[in-house]
Length: 462
Image (cartoon, rainbow, N blue to C red; front, side, top):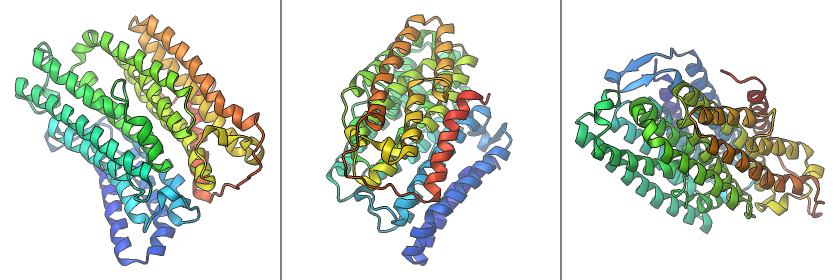
């Protein structure tokens, strides 16, 4: 029972592939997204009903409250992205970067990578941890290079493949160093007696560097802007949330579950990394013109905020990280939902091309503005509540300078988020109006994302 969500996703992926083999292509185009959405709802429902204290495979697979929360974030992100994809997959909207011979392959790859992420956060030994991370990552390479007719997508796929392979090398070598010193494969059996060995520190540093690529921590962020811009917008949205959460899950395994005794020693390094990441992301975002590159550097800055949760006392830091991951998922996907629908209908990706959106599509403009304000941390939206808990955790750890720096960075981020709001609400339309088309599934996904963005700020779920 503890693996029921994973079994549902894997079974659904194979059912979709087999359905595409035996059923007409038009059938899968019309019903594939709905089938995937129902399966994800079933996986989410099974997760809500599962006990939060299960152990399988001799302790190698564990379900607890923290694991449950990570899985909730993954499934919510999957639900929203599949909801946004319905019109693209059915062919109601034609996007040059999402030209599909069949919708089945795309949905199956999404489900496979989601299942890898679910296994990742439940893994409790090095082998299953690494294999799960690869199952979660390799399908993302395919998704990034999905548009075979687009040079930017091919370039993005190649860059992501090379950086991802390098990250995997760092991670597997770091894990091998830790195993070589300790002789222990199970993460739960590593304790404080190994924490002082120099090679364990080197191994942790290499694993952190490898995961830093996934989380887009500076200086491991170089791939993000080009990959975000070149990948299909739907893939960029999924990548910005799911990949980052998976990376944070690995960091959580190492620094909170296993080597928590090292937190006081590593905290200065993590604090500097958080400061540099949020500052560079915010400053470079100011000068971006392409909205997807803009969101890439916004995502980098958000990684810096999330890293602050690893500095605080254990309970406060854990709660802050978990809550902000959900907040970031719904807020970021609220913004990306509008970007997906608008760019797919208009072929427009520059910030200046959002001029006058409040007059042509007032509902979309309002939703995007609320999502951007949430990412900036404006009360009473969820981003403000999430950042408050992260800043509190860092302050309780004594990093007052970092809290001040994060507050200044949040102010800077408000400036560049307002660039889009200005285009939507102040600038006049350019006269070439194109109507954005939406069926009920994208509308529902966008509405759920917006409700989460507002509700999590007013009534924190914990």
